Length: 37
Image (cartoon, rainbow, N blue to C red):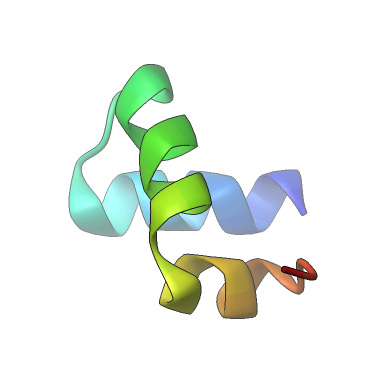
């Protein structure tokens, strides 16, 4: 899963804090990472 987080950070140019927020906020990020709601 960490590799997928790094991919999202690179694509969307996110900092650690911004990535953490977006992962909890966006359903598309949840789906990409394989997380349950």
